[in-house]
Image (cartoon, rainbow, N blue to C red):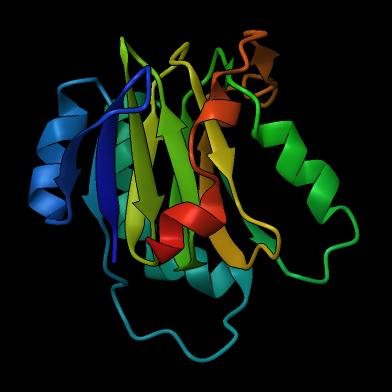
Length: 183
Ligand SMILES: [Fe+2]
């Protein structure tokens, strides 16, 4: 189940929210879109990327209309991915992008850490969650030691999501994926 915990920068837990409606409201305050999506028809086991896109086309089109996304794709991470550790480390340091970071979790999960002000928002995303982090919002992401998820991504520019690292070590001070999902 999705869960949002809000911490002070020094690591004090301020809020702990599990209701998707409440999570959406809290994240809206910082400009982050959070939605729960449903497929427009049941997906068979191991659907192709095309079938996944087709099943969520109604939701994707709404976002394209609203934000002008130009392209989208489907990515998967598996526990046997040869570069899983390298990729994990790449997203684990605080960074920004000039583009939105939009992820819809078709299955599996991941943990987003948003640092838009003097608080850190830790969002455990699970299947059915859509998160859209606006441009230039400081954040990082942890997919854990054995990542296992499939996501739809949307982009306004193909090169816009290249990470610009802030150089901060704040990510090291907060619980990692394993701790967040097991707590
Ligand atoms: Fe990012």
